[in-house]
Length: 101
Image 1 (cartoon, rainbow, N blue to C red):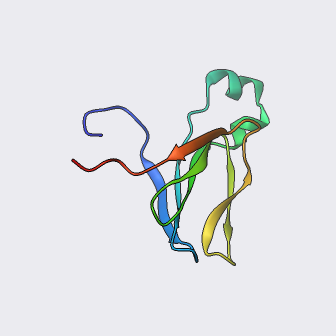
Image 2 (cartoon, one colour):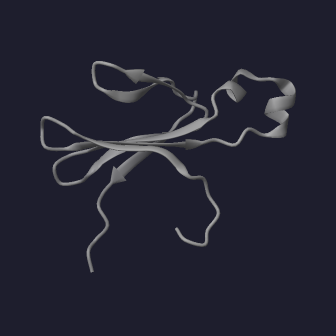
Image 3 (spheres, helix red, strand yellow):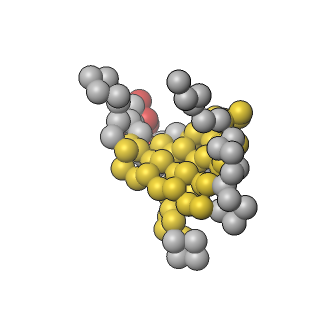
């Protein structure tokens, strides 16, 4: 949103599924705290946050939000995919489109 602090999206893609739904992947930088850098934790190696949404043909579905994620390019699907999702990703439930006014 304009005028708000945040992180720029580094990757945003929408993929159509065979059942008429969509898979949406968003990725952005994850800030690494001083403590992580000082302690040289493995989590500091994964400086990407990712949102993966799986939606049906009506735009309803679920997904995950994960901080500290390792990503790789999947040649079969032609999209990025997580290889390491943080140990406690946030589950997104009841995702639905915004009501039109």
